[in-house]
Length: 295
Image (spheres, one colour):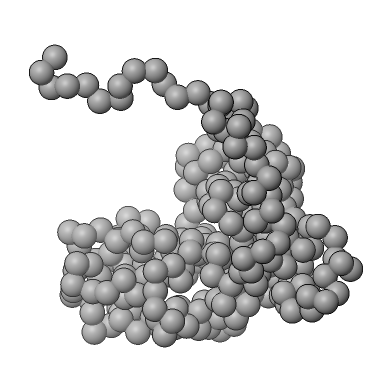
């Protein structure tokens, strides 16, 4: 694996009002690797992904993709960078009024001057890559959730991107379909040499596909290391738990999905009185949010 950074995140800060969602995050994504970003709900992993694809601008820090600081790019330059990567959204994000084939062809029609026959040929290749060539003329409403994910992946591959982003690729899928998606991610990384960033909380998938893993917690990066390093923490024997610091114990609990540990203790120790009285939390807007139609 080449150690050149395709993505470089430095001291990234993101705030929504008074809430800090990302707090000084640093991360590198190396060429040709599969990097899995994980964390619990509200940890900031989806927000980090949105910074990497340029839909969010940092409040502080930088996000560079292919050597370009995304915050400094105009719309035209940003579009040039975006043509180099593909995105598989969590839902597949297909256009319901278009066939599977037309969904895959969309970026080719919008961003290239290729002959329609060539576009049709490329679409067939991309659908064959994900095992969906027979479903080319079907509409999203006529295919399963797993097929929608694969169709979304075919669309992400249409322009032969050097970089692929996956947003919860296994979410809501049965185990067999999830394993199929995992294998597709691995095949693309190994055969096509694509660099992959996968945001997920599915630990079974994460340990199958990852070269390296990164874990976020409450907007901070807790650990970035090899899959083997995370496996060591996951499999750490409970009788030696005191040898781990609190951060390592927290990561271990998340990786194992244990009911007890630092994560659950933190929730238990949060002050009910403070929550009830609104101390340190935004106050609710006064008055009804919906008005009677009789007024």
